Image 1 (tube, rainbow, N blue to C red):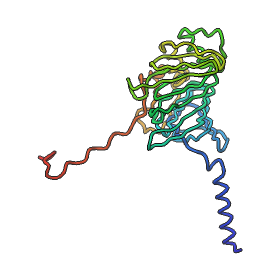
Image 2 (image 1 turned 30 degrees about the horizontal axis):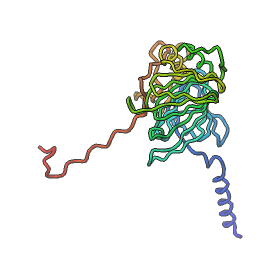
Image 3 (image 1 turned 60 degrees about the horizontal axis):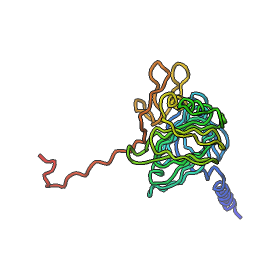
Image 4 (image 1 turned 30 degrees about the vertical axis):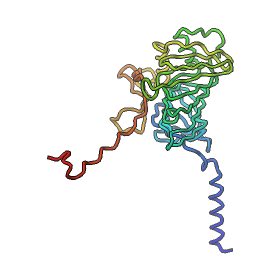
Length: 300
């Protein structure tokens, strides 16, 4: 066997091994579209934590973690947006998307921290996305929701008048609220919260429920407003005392920030209140074709 043949066989063998490695099999599901503060990504294919930066690809089973006063927004391939606030831990467990039919499957695991999810094309076609938390699973159909896992969940629930003195595990408690349909008013959308004790479905905007733990009952829906909303807003777009931490994004200077991450009000360290509905921006339609010659349309 010649040296040339040996080299070709060695190269083929190396390529075959690479094709079987986790690095080569990693499935990208989205991109980090905006970053504030200290955010870290641990790829499932190469478990070595590194800082997250705008434009960084997010793959299936990658671990996303944020520290205090930090936020990350992920833009998924179907145009869903997933924002996590400070001290959060998120993994996208499953993502299947058929762009031709607009169907697929989205599932994520949120162990702690605040979150906001705006449905993209997958759940607008009737498919249910899922977010698993320690206290309950949230099924999502074509809508916009936000919530928090941990101590802030107890604080938000208490602010709405929920009794949190009974069955409550503060580290794993869940508060979640339906903000509105992702497609606009009157277009439907709902979330279903379920655990070992039962389930509850929310289909009216600005309703929130509290779940103290996996074996705790799902408390009745309350109007999501006031202090409870301020708690979630602060966790999602946090700023340290004083000047706000900088937000990095793939957006050119002077352009509006990514959906779900808003600049702070000058001099307050408090972030601006988001609009009642946030949706990913679709590209404008192409211009109409020019009129046929001799038609007289558009001619002087």
